[in-house]
Amino acid sequence: MDPSRRRLLVAALATVVPVVVLAVVAPAVVTPYFLGMLPTVVAGVASLRRAWLLAGLTGALALVAPLAGAQVWSAVVLMTLVAAALGLAAGRGWSSGGAPAAVTLAALTVSPPALVDADPRTLAGAWPLAAAVLAGGVVTALVLTLLSRGVPRPVHDPLTGPELRFYVSALVVVTAVGTWWATTWFPDTHSWWLLLTFYLVMVPRTGDITARALARAGGTVLGGLVVVVLVALDVAPQAMSLVVAVGVVGSVVTMLTAPYWVYTIFLTLTVVGTTTGDAPVAGALERVGLTLLGAGSAAGILLLARLLSHRSGRRADRPAGRPAGQDAVPAGSGDAGGAQQRTDRERRPQGERAADDDP
Image (cartoon, rainbow, N blue to C red; front, side, top):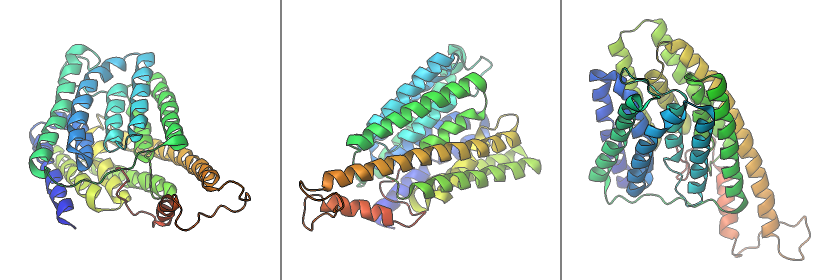
C-alpha cells in the first residue's frame, strides 16, 4: 500500500471511533450517526471539500426527509430530486459519496428511526434525528481534514453525452417508482433497502457490471445471515453492539483495501444490525430479497447502458467513408486513448476494485 492510501486508511479508521463509542453508550444514536458518517467518509476519500459539502447537505436534508415521507407525493418529489442531483453530479466527476447520501435520505424518508418520544415525522421528532446525522457528517469531515489534508486524491472522469443522459434518466425513473412503491405499500418498513441496493450498484464506470451486481447481492446475503444467526442465538445486546462496531470498522477498511464483495458483507452487517428495529430476523430476510431485486434492476439498466454506449462509440469512432464493418481505431488517432481505456475496463478481472469505482 502506498503512503497516500495508508494515510487515508488511518484517517478513515479514526472516523470510526465515535461510532464504536456510541454503540456502547448510546446504541439508539448509532443508526443516524452512521447514516451521516458513511457518505462523508466515502466522499472524503476523493475530496475533502466534497466531504464537507456532503456532510452539510445530508444533515440539512435529513430534517426534510422524515417530514416529506409523511405523504407519498412529497416523498416521491424529494427522492426524485435527490436522484437527479446524484446523476448530474456524475457529470462533474463528483459521484463519490453521492450514492451513500441518497441511501441515507431514502432510509429517513421511508422509515425514519425515532430518537425521542415524538413522532419522527413531526418537527419535534425530526430535528434530533437530523442533528445526529449532521453530527456524523461534520465530525467525520473534521477528522478527515485533520488527518489527511495534503494527501493526493484520485480524480474521477465525468460522465458525458448519451451515457450521462441515460444514467440520470435511469436514476430518476427507478427512484420515483421505487419511492412510490415503498411509501404506498410498505411505509415505515425496510422497503427502502431496494433503493439502497439500486444506488450502490447503479454507479458510473464499473469494471464489470454483472460481477458488481452479483457481489452486492452475495455480500448482502452473507451479511444478513450473520445477523439472523446472532439473533437466533439470542446474543446479548452488548454482543450485537460489538458486532455492529466490527462491521463499521470492516466497512471502512475494506472500502479502501478489499474487493467489492468483501466490502458489501461488512456494510450490510452494519446497516442491518443498526436498523433492524423490533424484528431483526425478518428485517435481514426482507433485505436479502430486496437486495436481489435492486441489484438485478441496476445490473439490467447498466448492461443496457453499456450496450448503447458501445454502439454510440463505434459510430463516433468510424471515419467518414469507412465501411460499416470497419470500426477499428487507427493507431495514433485522437480517440486511441479512450478506446484503450474502455478495453482496459472490459478486461479487468471480476471482483477487482478500480480507482474510479465508487463504493
